[in-house]
Image (cartoon, rainbow, N blue to C red):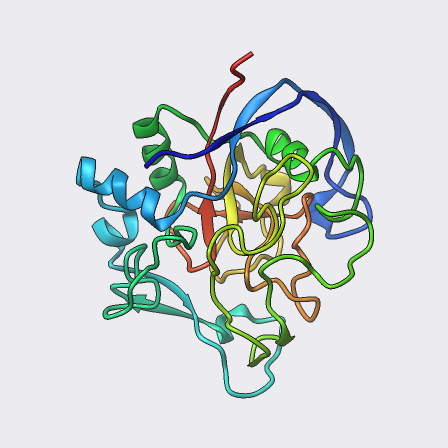
Length: 268
């Protein structure tokens, strides 16, 4: 099982935003060459094929002993402290997303992976991670400068995000959904915002160290960029289901809302 790759046209695109979170600034023009990008984030089923072929163990399984899992509180909390809705769960990993006894579903995006795990999958598949510029260019789907992957109007968000009063009262499942739950963007890509943050092959630079992010205990040291928001994005707290949104993911910080998608050189 290998990714379905979509040809992304090259061109000039806006990277970042001057009107949203500080870590997205400054907005600037970038030129991207044509390339291929997976239509969806890497799924549990795709990652399972890789593991069955190689015997690979993720960092959560191999040496960390667990991962961070979203644990909704039972009452309103101080949104300045993400530790109130994250719990370290021994045994949580890509196969057991909420801990021992839970089962990851094949059509959901794989989670609880760190950059090392994503790069290992890419090497096995003969692929790579996209750069931040490539990912954001593709996520915009030809809508240069639009706030969202579907345009400038927020509307009824066509993405897997948190609905309700974050983080304690959800109006629906507060977890991942099958890839492709919502319509594609202009380039035919699915889930470019929401569902899971997607790791890219761009380092989180020192000038962004310490930026508030969506998981506890993550610093800028040795971190890479993740793009696009997740099922925990909410206008109450983290309105980051946009192409320009970005957070750092550290080498030792797997979580329930981070995955990846693969890229490759253009066939042209």
